[in-house]
Image (cartoon, rainbow, N blue to C red; front, side, top):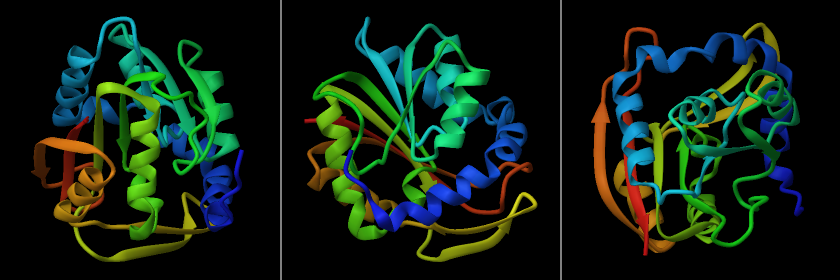
Amino acid sequence: MEDHGSHDSTRRSYDTVAENYAAGFRDELAAKPLDRALLACLVEQTEPGTTIADLGCGPGHVAAWLAGRGASTVGIDLSAAMVAVGRREHPAVEFREGDLLALPAADGEFGSAVAFYSIIHLAPSELRRAFEEARRALRPSGLLLVSFHIGSEVRHLDEWLGHKVDVDFRFFEPSDVAKALEDAGFAVETRIERTNYASEVATRRAYLLARRT
């Protein structure tokens, strides 16, 4: 697979925090009713018999939630350590190591896909390419559900979950993400914003549901 050197620090950072991250986020969906509702909506609209991809899946808790609702799921993540944790904790999910810009997936392999807070590690110039890759891996009319923090700032962390890291968290304006989706061949069908839940970092969050055209 093509190597994306600019993502090496992100990969190393997530490798470093994988065990702590998995422990902290394992049950996070239990406190996020809107996220669960949108994921359930995705399951309901996914073509029966097809697979849902979790792009930037981390330790696989979202993919596992989907699998628990009867979906066939594949989790894809940049971090080998995250993939290893996912395979250990969620045997019902298939995991693959891979970059959002070069997904380890066949053309039209997935019925739908979710990318929860994974585009936040991409540069703005990489959004369209990532969405083009998602489109390639989706069946015709497949859905992509994307979430991210709203804004224009970049938050850099040198320490995270008790470990030294080197990772940027990028915020995006919904209109910019929507344009990148449309430029990549999607039609945005739903846009939702919310404030953070009490257990979350204090940011506004956006969700875009887009259909492959």
